[in-house]
Length: 602
Image (cartoon, rainbow, N blue to C red):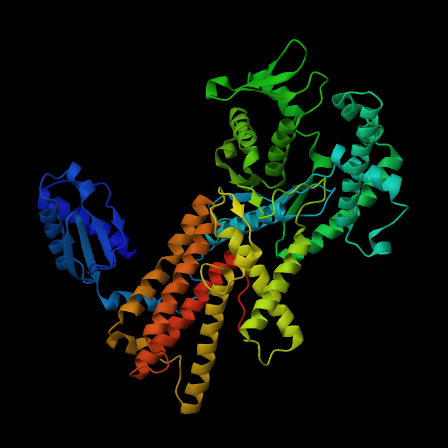
């Protein structure tokens, strides 16, 4: 039982004994710095049930807690706030159970829990991954890792958008202007090659529009009648009809793109357990349209189109099948969700990592699946996120103005290298070690900058600001971890030469009087399991990121105020070394949930 649970139970007993009132809940908060205490009980909510002066109520409860809980050593009441002081022995005993646990904060997978499928990335195969995809991938991967750490079985997946007019645009441009070039022949990743031809299509399309307008067509007609667009549309019809030549070209170019994506995913440090392809799923869902018609979930209009009327739910009418019998995206998403549960019967919920421009789509999708009667539809979550902006303005794939993910990763490592060289902290590093470190710092900076922000908020991404070695940044936290490793190496070296041990029995801890900074650090460490659970519930890596930053700030304050290796006695020294080691392990665990590596030296 946690301290908060113990206090909560005893506060209820105190209220029952002192006022003959049954209290349902107890509200806690952190004690303000200017008051003595470690945890604060808020009295004001109790005034709805207990008539009296909040200070006197606090005094009554405080006296009861001191009498009935060994670890409550004192209290003070400030207006409606009861500040509780906890004994050092409580924190030291709790630390003994934490310090040797390398997976502290993580929960083993609970067998009774249904699995969750987390979808992220889901790119189009007509262009490389860009900065927007980076936020998507980092969010989805991190949420998957957080859910696993909170005790849930997770399947990581993506649906690759490998069909449609946009794919045909790249294919047609390559067919017209590519002269048979391949990724190997020009030394370019396949996704970038496909992306170049997507841009080329747009350039040629605009030229043809201008020519048609000059010849007397209206702009609207020109956009519809440009020959290159009509040819792309014809290519899509051929693909859907299974034309051998078109399908062969489609497989070839998509193969190039998949190889390119895999390199980017590896560089970014994300992975997947299973893949879905739109070319396999775009016809799914039609059987459930028929089923929904029978049960009254859907209605058929006079023209033969099928709709779901959600007006009574505060939404509008949504088409699920066109008059010609073809499916729409909503139909496909219905079918894909159902297929996933067929493929993985232990799945009881799904998380969709998709930008906030699709908020309404997922609201409708989840509601339709509930109406179709699927119990797992109660556990669907849209991990909606804001766009990533750049100081230079908006990105457009078809105009080739996006920030390429691979280029961004390289640039981050380059910037990390330049700053590290300026700081002059890399004496004794080989060139290979330097390059590895630059990538670790650069990638850590990128991931932390993106993930520390609440997913729903837009981000203005500034690469230089993200690699600052001071403040709320990835490199600052990585540097603190590396500093602790340096302390631990010195401790091992010093104690070995002195013939003592940093891992001696922790019995001596019982005699330690905690420094205020040690106590604050122990309190912060104890919060980690709760933060992991909250981050899982809220699908928010930002909670992990900002917790880790707060932990690092507490450690640095401890480091500046308390001598670790120069402690007054051996018990204190061993305790402070083990406390530092536990902080480092917690940083490492927290950053692992964000997909960020921590360097042993910096």
